[in-house]
Amino acid sequence: MNLESRLRDALQPVDPPAGFASRVRARVERDMRAEHAVGGGPSASGWRSWMATAAAVLLLAVGGYGYRQYEERRDALAARSQVLLALQITSRALETVHRQVVQADTGTDAPRDDAGAEGDER
Amino acid sequence: MAATAPMRLDPARDLRDDRLLHAARAGDLDAFEALVRRHQRRVYSLAYHAVRDEGLAEELAQDVFVQLHAHLDRLESGRHLAAWLRRVTSHRVIDALRVRRHASSLDVVGEPPVDPPRADPLAARLLRRALARLTPQARLVVMLRYMDDLAPTEIAEALDMSINTVKSHLRRGLALLRARLQEGRPS
Image (tube, rainbow over all chains, first blue to last red; front, side, top):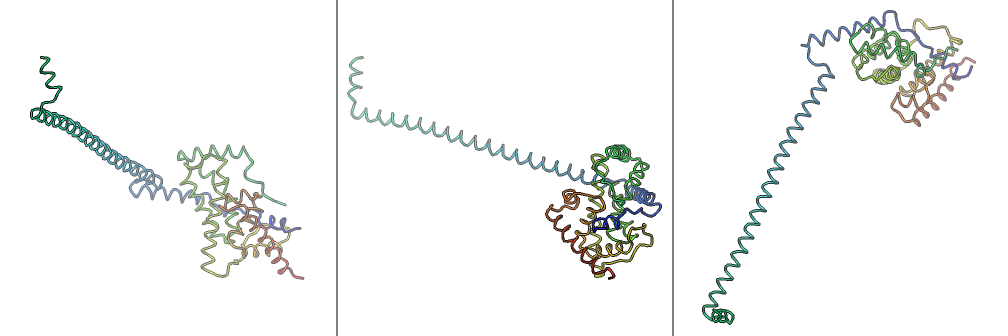
């Protein structure tokens, strides 16, 4: 007989001692009773699903808060750029007015040719 | 030769396991006990041949089935049950052998009180002693190969090893067993 056949012979299946399945069942029943006695709280898999739910809720809350912060920052930036734009427009308008005032002042001191011509036409 | 048939190619058995699994999931303890009876021999044999100690083998096999009861929801079908049991038993056995190695440097244990008749009792005893001197992983690889007729790919899956590691354990394990058999044989 070669080694492989000898190994198969030496490793033939062995039956467990009598009553094995009943003892397993008794252990399972005992564990189930102990689990209930603890207060009917969730089992290991129950705890895992509770933890997963809690983590998901926390993630949603943190995510929601973060998104709100982001939106507020985005709105603030938009408002700031609008104010800047308004200030630029105002500044340009003031500059135009200022230029016109300066031109008008200059025109009073030394009337321009076109102003005079305009007056003649009238 | 009473080589065991592979567990994987039996659709009728898988179907029966499916029904029992379904009932056990619904809380039917009779169905669960029937599942235990259908698989106890293989689980116990793997534990027993690995640790060579009836008490420890029963404890390990019981732990496997208690774990099965806690994981019934996660088993997809009866087809997966045999592989799941083999995998969990193998890992529990390896852990137990490691603990025992730490506890005692003498890893060869006595013969069981009752043993099935063998074609060559002396060779069987020498082989079991030689097997007990292999590392836990090598022992499980050799056992899964010659108890369950598993292919190296299936052993690799059951033990979370690469195929090359499995082949290496098989090659070296068989060489060691052969050498120890020759050493132990009376001339």
